[in-house]
Length: 267
Image (cartoon, rainbow, N blue to C red; front, side):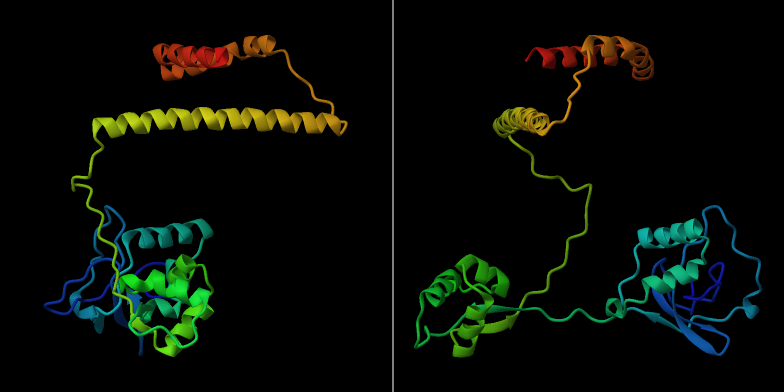
């Protein structure tokens, strides 16, 4: 897919020994100009066009330094193009307009305790030194928060040689592996979790009812007329709707739901 106002992707020859996947960035020629383009997916069930190889041009270069676009981004670009009646190439152009996406990530620096305390010690500086005494590399804002100081105090300790700025270790998210076995709660932990969930749910319901009552009282004090409907008449009027719902979800499920409702009313 070229980032131009074109109705569909163009076909190109793949250089021998090269393997391409959807989402990869490549350099492709169009006329006398070479464009940064993206390998696109062919619509499901669509057959490749019957074009003689000698009429196709070859991809110039595969850009391995830039991570490929995920499949969800390609699908999103197609969806936006269809929804807005735009060409997918122009949607891709907007996605590629963020030049920083094609630049290597800037190095991130943290600070680490390496030197002696400064000649001029203050309570704020002492808290920073105590927090950084584990000799780990700290993100400057995190260390400032842990010590309860401003980042200016951190900068002052760097200038004095007490702290040193060092690159933070590279961090990459692990790929999601749905087949990997996860840690499981023990029966005791499950029981605690369920019990505390019930308590939290009861507390939230109590808070909602209490706040709602306070709000109604304030509205009445301000002169608002509050109408309280006859709930028995309302429930009777809703019966045809309940019957339709029960028919959809099943009589047994509907009956069980109403039992829950009645039990909640009695609490």
